Image (cartoon, rainbow, N blue to C red; front, side, top):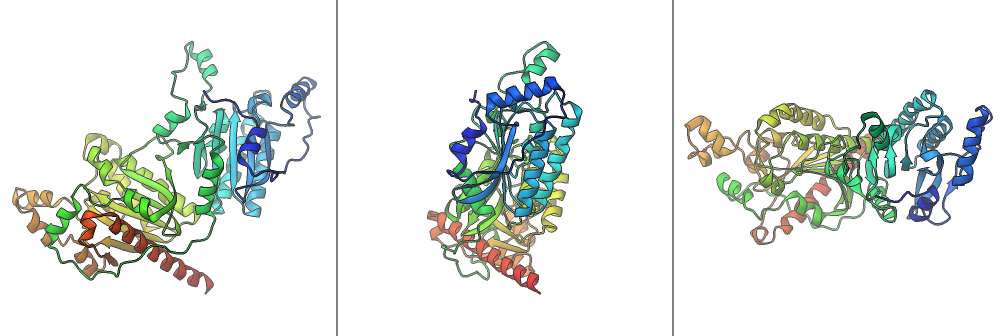
Length: 483
């Protein structure tokens, strides 16, 4: 189990030296009963703080942040009316000053000594945070040990990026309360940071010592301007020298370039986000914050190699929609990467609303408020591929393709066998070259013979083209805004 850290520990380990400036005003406790005042006084003496949270402005690796930090030694970090008011004031000030908020939690939840009046203040905190996010400003959360109850169920669960201390106990229900109410201990291992990552509820396990590097990388993407391009763009192709079937076979080879390759050679400071943040995780979908050839963006991509182990299910598409929502909230361009042999076809997928998730992805992609670039990287089979296809600009690798079914499936429907797959693929005009001709694809990235041996060359070229299109869209958007 993780050690409990104090607010002073976090200031020391996370914030730049001597950069913290308190925003906290003195708290008037005279309205409380004498017995509670004595309890507050003992908590202040024990913790060296006047409340269970401290707030202020600081820097992390030179970047300004507003800080909301729990002090567990003050009545177990519980949130009363004064603590809640302090948090709301700090978040609103951060919004007014247009700086990110970094919240670190360690709390048993609502302060029982104050009851419902304190409990409902969680609504005020959540409202202030949502207004901060609506202003396009980052909200980052580090869950310490322990984080439970109303804190976890409000400001602890609203981060754009949420991480937790290794081994931290994090959960809605305090295990002691569960044991008293149910006369048995809460199952071990459920309310741990590591288990929450595995279930797609939080993004990573990060120690306080490693938190500055994560904050620096995250804010570098979310706040800093674009960097100069370093990748070489290939002159767009006008068609393909391969037949449609030959191109399809190229995309099905085990060593074919994938979204991980694009991020590895074309991305910088990439931060993987895990799961839907609602209790689902599907390895078939990658959601990441990154700089693609210098351009800050959100990447939502289908991992073909993961799909070889497990087909892309509805949870993967819900992860994709999380990425779309983040891009809109943070004002970052969205790059979707399409590379799937097809979505999961099973009773579980049907009951998980696969069709509805495809529809919602299409709807979200079609109505994004930020620049969008779709990359048809390889296989584009079925509704799962179409889910990430609508974009301002569609870029396709030269041998990529998009079809309503695998060619073999189309052949089975029309001819009763799979023997006419190549014929069906050509007749259905599934190739990237056909899509370019029809206006559904806007740019073809050439594929070279060397890419078969060294796929990273194509990965670099795809990243360079996607970044080029982001720059173009960003420039056009700036010109429209200036009119």
